[in-house]
Length: 147
Image (cartoon, rainbow, N blue to C red; front, side):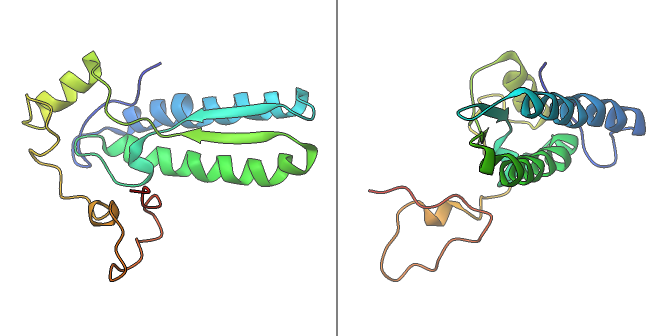
């Protein structure tokens, strides 16, 4: 279904927010609740979220607002259905060369797709290669990858 309309906090309209909430958020919540009611032990429910769960993405204000909330719902659902043997997973895809990414790169002034045009530096970047003197990553960052 794609994602919510791109835009900034000042540009996105209430209608865009409401449409995105109905489709991206409530659509996924309704589907997951229906699936959870039917699944038995060994079942699984998956959510395709976004990297914006960890770090907001420039030009995607609505998605930045909704995806972390959907991740929170997924965690709550996992706590509720886990005792019944049902797994709940969230997938946070990275950048994939799609028409939407090309559109977003153009809107952010990054036609080459380097991710460096207007996006602020990631506060998680420094945690990629752990060292004994490195501070622990912020709690919202993924754990460091083994080297």
